[in-house]
Length: 295
Image (cartoon, rainbow, N blue to C red; front, side, top):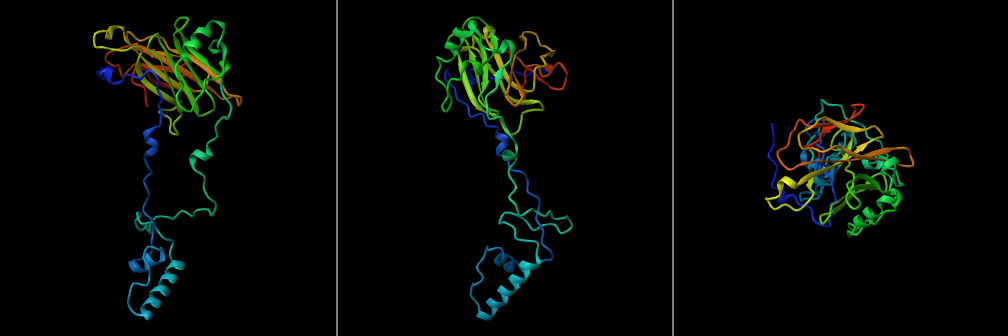
């Protein structure tokens, strides 16, 4: 079933664009399981043990000493304190014992290449691309990023002397993508999300028009999607291709570590989306919908 597209005028990129490109899913906190306590001890004592309530809340000095003594006893005998937002643990469930050493976050555990990737084969810049690069880098670079050396730029698509698609990665997390069209170009830079959009994919831009639209020139508009896939140099191609969809354009870049990434652009006619249209790598280990990119 075909999906009607959103009004393209609401999806227009600016001439000079900077997208932090953070994955909104990174903001979702993992659900916390209930925490455990044995029995049902006095809640005031629990508050004292956990530092949530001062023990001197009036009453006789004898009562204060009794409460404090009970609190110390409970502290030794109990499994531990909970934060103000946690619930008592279920004693029927095993309690994980945490190491005294600080556990690094997933982001800290994951290693990234520190050096830039360099394009392979026809993706490398050649003499015929100089006018193209001048056109591309005449655009103001997004804040915090600078024009890369030519030998780090991967040319994904060459349309003519001054138009096409390019990308580069200055390290294993940071990328930039340029869609260069006469009178309507954009550069986007950002970092790969911690959580990839789909298996084998590192990042996607769902689809952007390649020119200004006014509602009367929709037949001329091409919607361009951008994908960074893990690995290379196996080729990607359409498995099911919709009418009006262009070929898959790709460029492979390799880091000094040997790790490779593949940059892809796909353009299609503006119009309804075919959710069954699909692109796969030649070994079929990576496949994704070509007109409804995961993100």
